[in-house]
Image (cartoon, rainbow, N blue to C red; front, side):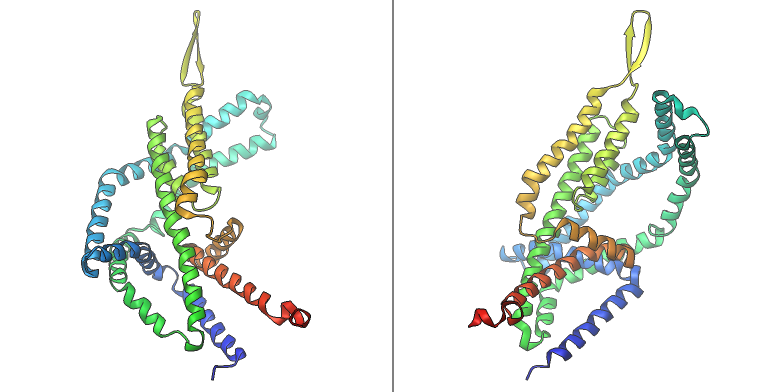
Length: 367
């Protein structure tokens, strides 16, 4: 005989509360395990495909591990040093870029020269803050979230966790399936399949879109001659999974840097006079790179790789990222998308059950 609904809700509510409390207290401690599990989940289809090709599970995981190590070594040797160098240069150049912005505004709006004006005071305050806090911010980041010890732990623990979870993925899922409540096993399996479909469409598909767009932006901007093109492409690709935010942030950053770099970079000779002109062609090329990237994302990449049946509305996704990020920090942002997908699937199933119930239909429809 099944437990009453009231008791079931009590036990599931306790389990949910325990999960949230553990997530709250452990925080960054479980970060390597969350990342390792996410990597194993994303690579499991590749391992399954290699198994179907005739390899054992161990051999499949070994092939994936060797390929991953090779890619990581290539990135470490070719990309990461340049990325770090451009990031450091961008931070160090930020005060100079801001001074140029202020000078350009003062040339076009002389009234800003008035020291008593609100805009002039705000510009001065922002400039002083950038100069005073820029280095302090970098040092704070390096000493906290990106400290040497944390980096070492992530680089060592995450691959080990991912390796073992990928190796035992099928056994773990079978073990979890054997622990499901027998009265609800089919319903839970159905919900799990829907959640897996949603996560596979979003995380694997959107992750591929982020990788493709990030690579495209970085290479295209560097070929266009934009300073810091690699870091701009990295940032734009990294946050592409947030609807519209990746394009807006990356585009604004790239076009802003292009304006600073190419404004007054062309010498125009008129008779005996030489003036500085703006290279609008280069600025237009940078803007066109992002316009073409958005066209590719909206019409080719997202429909092909993600699909239209993900079921994660952009507003719901932004809300989940904001809530979990504010409550649980960086770990919360990592688990926000999977939990949002789970809640969305369960909510749709609950609405479907509600529409089938007498509470919604009433007795007249049955009669």
